[in-house]
Image 1 (cartoon, rainbow, N blue to C red):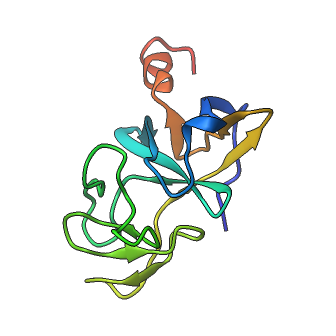
Image 2 (image 1 turned 90 degrees about the horizontal axis):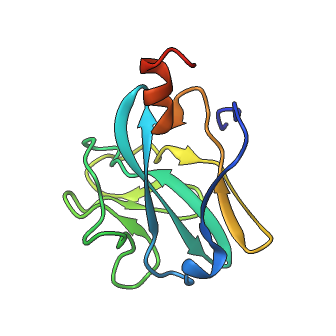
Length: 136
């Protein structure tokens, strides 16, 4: 079950920037009011986005900036602990924790662009400045 979007979709990148099983597009978000990173990648022709945070220990997972897939390009892999996740669902398939899944971020691809949807818990970084200035 995914958290319901709370706002308009926000542009992330052009569709052609996401090569099949290639480098992900990394972006900044606020998760529960704290700065965090997220990523979107193309896998089997679809786009999927997750918070860049391992289920085992809340650390960023990419090997190099935007590099999340293992050497066979089959699984999202945590570079710290070796946990492997199914790219379509974010479900853990192997590693130090036996259950759990990555925090999914709803995305949509349309008209050659990729958009993400903020939720109550995952907001754009701009929301922090709006909260400080009393606009939220």
